[in-house]
Image: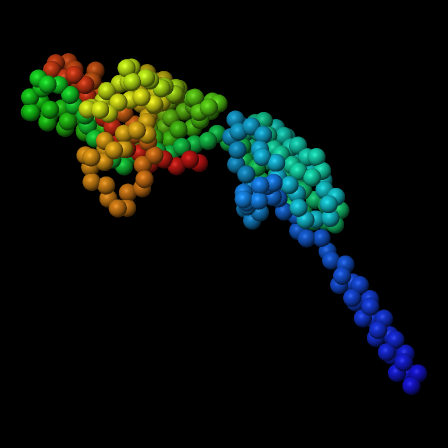
Length: 278
């Protein structure tokens, strides 16, 4: 009987110890969250990409762990870290990759990779049209001129690397249908014109709100706008699988052909491009 009571007491004691151990939960894993619950941070990818001109990031709050956090930064030449014990922000100060290590006293560790690089934009040409104006041009001259413009229009796409604040300059790499490429510095200026100063391209289609891009190696100029999609849509059949366009590039090639075609008033090459920011 005493053995049964002793056994029962030991069993009860083991249950109490087991229950106490189960109720003492380990800290949950460390995660990062934004203050706004509608904005979700990717805690699986654990990476952020910034440009040198991004400015300070939106604060991320550290959740989970035991609450006793330390933060270390592997590359202070690329990223400045600001941590107040609860939330953390990052400010790019140079190019490079930084590993941000967040850990607590319970050995929970979270590593965030931050890459600081110049933004790149890859714009691929999908459709083209050719605008030729000149009331005294013959039908034959217009046909011949359009053929020459098509033969000269060999760009497949453009890659912009923005190395200035507000994307005002950097390098442009142009790649052609013959697989050749050229790279040069460029400047980009945003221009807004009133109705009186707007540049008429054809009919009622005018350049009012656009970027003027100057390629420095040859001082060539082209314009970028989002206003000409309807113009291209009227002149070409858009396939169902064609991606939505991002920009229209406008090149004024009048000076290249005016000597050969004195009756020419204006000649434009318009390229519809699809862009991807990287």
